Structure formats: structure tokens, C-alpha cells
Image 1 (tube, rainbow, N blue to C red):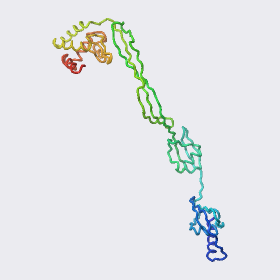
Image 2 (cartoon, rainbow, N blue to C red; image 1 turned 90 degrees about the horizontal axis):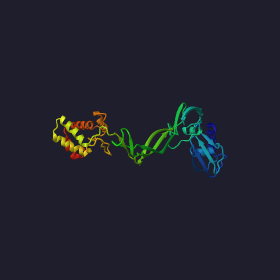
Image 3 (cartoon, rainbow, N blue to C red; image 1 turned 90 degrees about the vertical axis):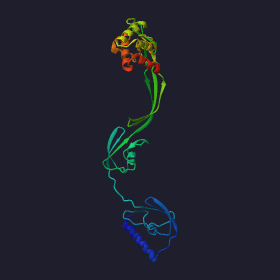
Image 4 (cartoon, rainbow, N blue to C red; image 1 turned 30 degrees about the vertical axis):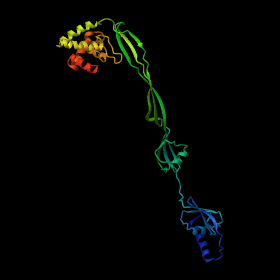
Length: 331
């Protein structure tokens, strides 16, 4: 109802009340009065809605609406609604929305982001990300981005390569190989919590990492033939000559004999089953001795030259190496 009419009715009603002319006092009734959505029950003896508003001191405003009209007779159980909201138009807004791998451009009359999503038939998951709050007002030119977030557990199995233990033997022809024990890869099981944003992995947290089965060591024998393989006695003769050439005396030679007797029994093809150390001086790895000759697998002199070079650089003399071995059980 227009404000002017409302004010006029209130004035007329009040005038009649004040003069007492032709006015019959109404009985007391219960009326539900709702102002901008907030309701309360009031007891009133007003005859009309206009008198009720005056009695309850309801403010008069240019934009207010009253239902039912102010001249309506008041009766028990009547509901009166007052709304002060400013009536406004809601012109369409141009919005850009990126979601599910696509970008959409459209006009909308939705007032809030939540209403816009409902309008587009979009549901926001608990972990999804939106670059605006649901209660945010939709603005013309607004750019919205909705990212789908999925977190799930994943289990992977990785193969663990097995190691190979190689030993060399004169019983096989050069290059010939014999498998003493087949190697078997191990398996590692990894359970992770993975977060995907729009289908792209963002983060991964390992929950469990364990070896399900251990790899089995492969054991190979590799033939070197009998060429160049000498007896322990012959190898020691070679060593005595090379020790003398370095200016070391027989006492140093005896220390060397003791050291390599414990290490390899002076065998050219001796190989440690676990570490892979090889030859008379037990070089680790064996191919270090290639610096003194390509025949390092079978040539005693090549191995001894490397071994004496190693001892001189690290322990100064064979007796120095032997003393260290006695204390540590390695050199």
C-alpha cells in the first residue's frame, strides 16, 4: 500500500479514536505481527490494522509494505506482515565460470554464488575449492573457478633388483658362464594418500613403505680358462721380486705373505661371496686392478702390482697393512 494512503488511514483512525465520535471499543485479541521476517504475538484492542501499527509504534517508511491493508478489521488470530525491504530490479550479470575442464561464459540473474551454482546444476563437494564464498554476491564480470578435489589411497608395487655375486673359475672357458643360484627380484609395497586437483596429482603422502619380499642373490661363475693362472707359490715368487724392486726387505715380504694368505690364499681367482672383492689382494671392486692391465682377472703379476700400489699409498709398507689387518680384520 502507498505510504500516503497508509499515513492517511492512520491519521483518520487516530482522529476518530481521539474524538470518540462513533467509535466502538474493540475486544482484546491476539495478533501475529511479522516485521521483515521476525514474528511476535501481540495482544491488542485495536479495531484496524492502522490502529494496531500505531499502538505497537511501528515506524512508517516510504518503502514499507503492509499485508493486509491498514483499513482491515482486526480479529483474533490475524497475521500482519510488515516489510521494509527496498524493492529493486535485478539485471542479468555476465559471469565466467571455469569447472570440470571447461570455461563457460553466460548471463545470470542469480544474486549469490550459491544460487548461481544451483542454477547451473553444480554440486560443491566437501573438498572442492571455489575462489569465492557461497554467500558472495554475484557481480557483473565476475570470474569464478571451481576445482574438483579428490583424495584417495593408492597402493603401488615396485620391483627391487637382485644383486649378482660373480666368481671366476679356471674350470670354465674364458667368457663361459654358469648359474649357481638364480636371482629373484624383490617387491616393495608402497601405500600412499594422494590428492588430485582437477585430475592432476597435487600431493602424495606415504602411509606405508615395506619390503614384501626380499630379493634373492644371483650367483654366477665366470670362466677365465687356465691361461695366466699360476699357483700360490709362483704368485709369491712374483711378489718377492716386485717387493724387492720397491726397496722393501724380506721382513716386509713376510708381512705381505701373511696378509694375502689370510685374504685370498694367494689365489688369482679368489672372490668374496658377499662383498665381491677379487683376486690375490682382494680388490673391491675387482676391476680397479684394470688400471694395471686388462688381464687383471687371471694375471698374478697384474694383481700384485695393483696390491702393492694400494698398500704403499694407504699403509706405506706391507707390515703397516698387516698391523692394521690384525687390529681390524680388514685392510
